[in-house]
Image 1 (cartoon, rainbow, N blue to C red):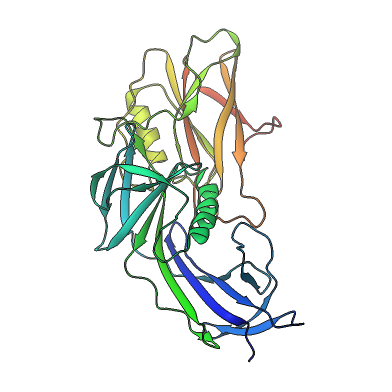
Image 2 (image 1 turned 60 degrees about the horizontal axis):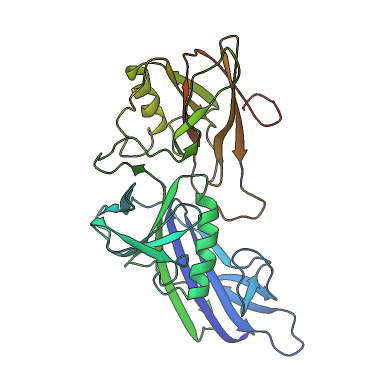
Length: 344
């Protein structure tokens, strides 16, 4: 089998919110050669000129028409728990005996690297996952962009660098260089107010609440959002009392640890939870973009985010949700998309 010259293979295994091994294959095709053969993990693949997507890098070759070699991985136990507070500090705890080399965090736009792997720690700006394991700076930046895109709809996302990489792939013919990096992806990192351990998630958007008029637009505040609700189908849940608010939060945070305390409800306020239902991967999200009250009925207009074709997504079942607070008492709620169609 004739492989490319200067063959190098850089692997990264993703577990947790993603369950996949990626490998960048670097090399040069021979003069007049449009393709080359290679065996990766015992599987025959064809290398050609690189295609263009979020993970393609200079000097790499495409593998069976994709920018990287990809192999599904089995699910593993949780390796880390992470929470963030409104002061920008993090609480990190390794789980199930995991040995961590570093922890990174993204809010979907910017990346930071945490100053430690256990306890209450600070963070400093990072260019994606630059410096993570044996990733090159270019690989860390590309993977960081892909994961940030996947995490934008799932709240904050943490990535732990593990000290125990997967068994290396077999490469035939042998590569002149191999690198291995193991990452654990933790979506849905909760942000809490300073001094309120496990408290109410810090409002991440929306508008300031104000009194509701008898008909017309209603101001609202987004209280929290996430991607791991205990809800299988699209649904809406309303709370006008502390007990109902607790039940609503239990549904929203049903599939993750660290459920917050119940947000205080002023007289005449309503909490509304909008649940998108289960999705097969990450990359989905829902947020309220408008609210209107008419004859005692509240109508919420939502924007639904879905992953683009070929985009990198966390490979885990998700259940996106958002929670908003409105001024006024409502029991009849309609939720529609931006085309005016009922949420499904």
